[in-house]
Length: 109
Image 1: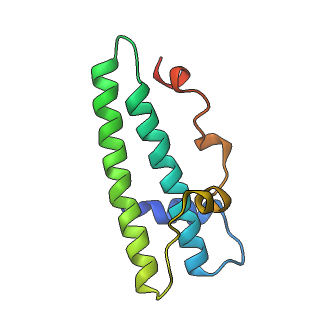
Image 2: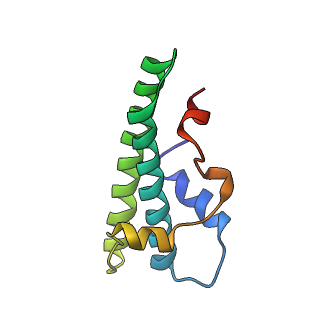
Image 3: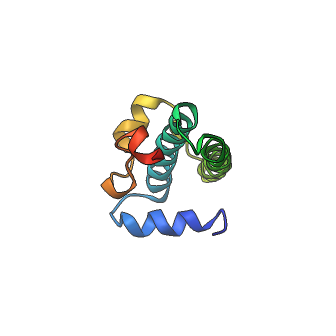
């Protein structure tokens, strides 16, 4: 999947009357929370597959950082302000239980 394919995926998930920048800020908020979840998994991984999972989570959160930067820069090109506070991310994320991380240990076993 190319880095820019994420926009299509998330846009299809939530078709509303939001403006383009509102939608992009929603995507940004969701990716910021996803990034934090990946960092948590990276820091808290345990068990026999520690080294492989530790490296994989680092790869994933590094890629997510790039996506976050691209989305924020796109919002700026539309002369809007990207969301930048964690409390605001929580209010604006795209909620979809399929993508949630319920339990660190459960995910790494």
